[in-house]
Image 1 (cartoon, rainbow, N blue to C red):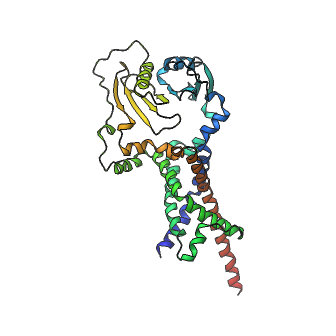
Image 2 (tube, rainbow, N blue to C red; image 1 turned 45 degrees about the vertical axis):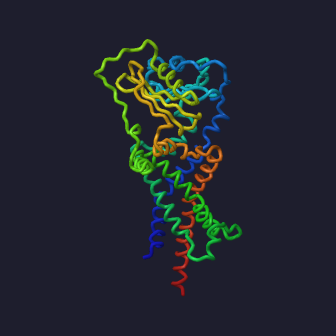
Image 3 (cartoon, rainbow, N blue to C red; image 1 turned 90 degrees about the vertical axis):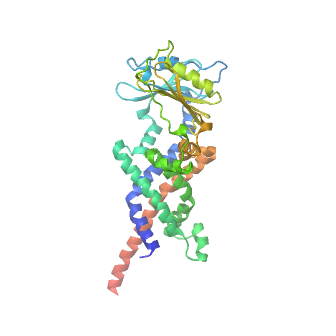
Length: 378
C-alpha cells in the first residue's frame, strides 16, 4: 500500500471519528472571535466617559461590588482596570458557586451592571468551545483528542490534495462552481481545506497549548535555543518563617499603585486575589486593553506588600514572548481586526470540512453499493 493510500485511510477514519468535535469546536470558535466587538455594541455598561481624575483604588471597587454580597471576602476577588474609556470589573464566586462579574465606573466606583456569567451567551459559547459542556477532566481528552486528530488530518489532507500531474494543479486551486453539486462539495472540501490549512494549524495548536500548557514548553525551549533566560525560570518564593509587618492600607491598593508606577504606559491592569497570606499576591499589566500579549508581571508579599519579583515584557526571552502571544494568536487579534476576520473565516472553513468530507464519503459509499447490483445483474 502506497503512502498516499495510507494517508487516505487515516484521513477517512480519523475524520469520521473526530468530525463532530471539530465541527462544534470550530463553529463556537468562529462565534467567539468577535465577542469583545459584539459585546461593546450590545452591552453599554462596558464603556464609560473618560474623566480627568485618576481612577479610584481597588479597595473601593471591591467594597462597592461586594455590597450586595455579604460574607464574600475582598481577598478572593479579581479586579481589572481595562483602560481610560472602559469600565473596571470585579470578579468573584458567590456563596452558591455562581461566577459574578460586576462592572463599575473606574472614576467614581459606582456599580454599572452585575452579570451572572452562568447565563451569559458568550460564556456558554466559550464553555462549549473549551469543554463541550462536559466535566473538565473528560473534556481535556475529548476536545484535546479531537483537535489533535484535526492537526493530523491537515497533514494527511495536504498529501491527498497534492496534484500528481501539472495539468491537475489549476483544478486543485479553484472550485468548479458550474459542475454538479457533488463535485462542488468535493472542491469545497479540498480547495478550501488547502487554503485554510496553515492558519487552521495555528488556531488548532494554539488551542492545544491552552488546553495542555506543557505542550508549549518544548516550543519555547526551541525558540530560546534550549537556554531559557534565568528570569523566566524563577519561581516566586515566600519565606513564611520571616516575620512581616502588615501595612495600614489595603494590599490591593499597594499592588495597584506599584504596578501603575512601574508600567505607566500600560492600559490594562489585572490584580489577582490576595488570598490568605500564604501565597504571593500577583498583578499583571497589559499594554493594550483586551490584548494579552505585551505583559509585565509582578509578585508581592501578601502581608507587607513588598515587591518580590518583576518580569517586564522587554526583558523576556523570545520563547516566553511567543508563549504570552498564544491567546492573541488563537483569536487572530495579534494582527488587529483584520486578523480576527481571517480567524473567523478559517474557523468557519474548519467547521465545514467535517460536513463536506462526510458528504464525499457517503456519496462514494452509495456509489459502490449501486455498482454491486448492476454487476450481479450482468
